[in-house]
Length: 114
Image 1 (spheres, helix red, strand yellow):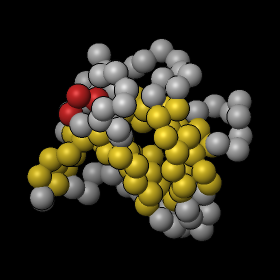
Image 2 (spheres, one colour):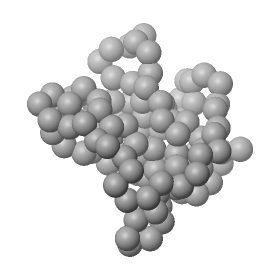
Image 3 (cartoon, one colour):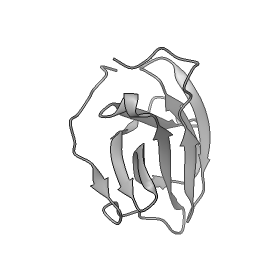
């Protein structure tokens, strides 16, 4: 995987549409500001070799302040690997149908993003 970075502007409340229900859930990966613009990939742990899904970390402006996250609005229910890079998993998360799962990006276990 080539590390990708984007320069998207911030999003406000109500700008991300989640498609949850039945066997479809959503995932929010919370990160620090240092990952702003970086794409984070996830893949089904039980389906090795299938293409990964990616989303860019964006600044989210909400009533309670500002945070940074990557949002996956419609993932099939299952157990997912979260990837640091092409070869290194950073963690795992379960996505359930009809539910928004959350994952906290580790802040000290891996080298800082460029």
